[in-house]
Image: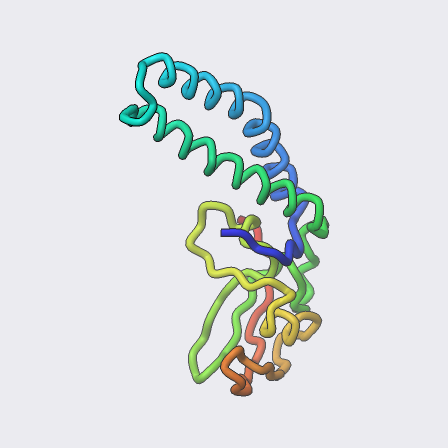
Length: 161
């Protein structure tokens, strides 16, 4: 669930994630503490499903807080890139690989919040290989299995959400 290489975030994504973090560390923590206290008052904690569910929810929330904190501390924040056909973080890129077309976002998965869009970090093997290339360029990278993968850049447009 975490992504160690924070990478690029648009200003809009950064602001949205900062607001989420503020909500979780303020109102969210107060709400979960209230739920835990109410469940604790119900009696025996060993057999108290409400208590255990609230504690599990608290653990998930604290993990998301840690994830957001690290992400926001380490991310490179920038404006949506120019529509100049050059691949860079924040671009929706279409490539040809293995004879098939594939479209994905180059940047942090949090930019495409809530969408089914595939995302590659600019720090990944493919992301690093195509970053800075222009439409029409061909390049290659070494896949995790050791094979060389040929890639042709077909399109690069700023991601608008």
